[in-house]
Image 1 (cartoon, rainbow, N blue to C red):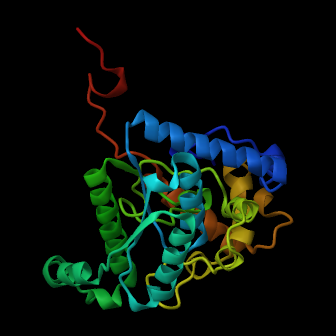
Image 2: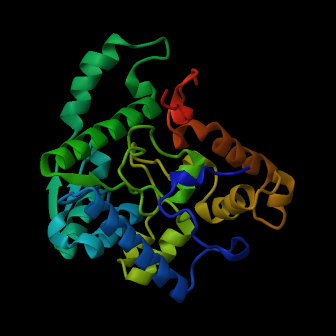
Length: 296
């Protein structure tokens, strides 16, 4: 197994023998490199700043903090984009964190947009599977895309870049919505496994309650990443390192890890099945087209 390294922000991030980056010196080097990457991308795009959709979770909070360090608090716009009542606490956390970092924060309720979508588009395209209330993942994907529409509208209006919050674990598993939270101008945490995100968040001194929050996409009350994926990141990350970074076969990758074969197979299958999410849409490869096109 191998990953398309162009998916990620800094492709040659070093991990000795598959070890996670968690020691103080390496974390500081990671921090400096991510901050420099954000700064360079904003400058190269001649942008006025960045937009970050803030969920109140560890990934978006860390991404925002690194963005503030890179371009200054005055050039970072945080967006709280709730759609369900269950998100109230998380949005409140996001606002508190944004205030603490000194950035502009706008809360925009997306429920009216979702209701309009369900009453027009969704109702016209209903299938035998039943209404959207019976298909939470379909509705969740729609919400993720509404959030990204909003983030890009803000970015376009203010000449900013949209900074994505996905980490390497999520990207490898396809645990994001294509053209939803999977759409961004850069992923500062895209090379960092969730294990490393937690370590970096602690290194930067983010609030303990944020670091220890149960990861969730927040699409319904009881949803968690572990419930959707079948295991926690503590279990998933070591397997992904062996499967993807080291290219080991499944049986060998499982050795010594706290994971059963069924779960390991499911994780490996998620990586393979989500390849389309990590690549640009294919073209038919007609003669004279693509990268090998030449004049005359």
